[in-house]
Length: 285
Image (cartoon, rainbow, N blue to C red; front, side):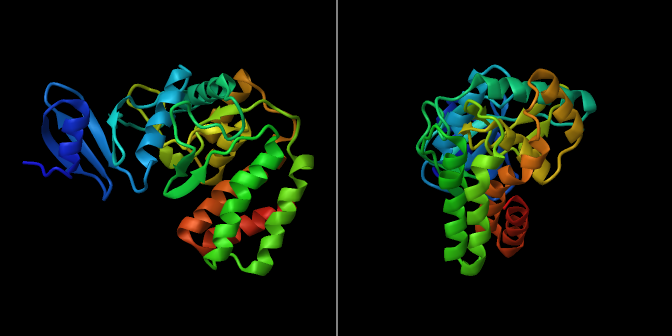
């Protein structure tokens, strides 16, 4: 018997199917078997609007018909239910396909930098951190104002970045117009593309989960993959370059694109990530 507030009850309510059994995987994630249906993942949202934002992001990525993402079975303000992805070991072939699929996803585009998915909220999340989807037409200015500086201010307010250190990041933001490379149209981003959000399926494909989807610069997704490492990263890059070559100098811009996720991690996890962000900003600035 499931309580009205349990993952099993949420899965039954949102899918319309009876839950035969459930297996907690973490404090916020449960695997549940539906009677006569698939095995699903039941995720409890940690912030108002988080489940809606994630569901909208998954559907927007799926609409592009490129990368593989789990099917959304249902959601409300607190719970998200998606299909479970059977996983296996990564492979060079799957990595190459992922690179090509990412290039196609980015090419699907977005209405503007910072644009949320069509049915997604303006106030969304990246991991456990709030992320506001405010739009702009100029990537360097938008990225500094709405992706880097808000988390820098939060890190200073929390004491994770010392006030005297903030100028290093601010100087890097001032240099972005000269560092950004050729202007590109807004890309349809996963938005939180670190290794933990890439599942290597038993079907021989990579699957993407937990998006913070929005319109942005395509190099940001690739820089996030680089930040914490990813199996067969060079194969992913090879597949991407075969499908949609990056502008010259892209390797020199990786650090600029990593300022955003590093400062998010500094806000969430503390000083070690702040020091990494400051080191990157020093190189960029």
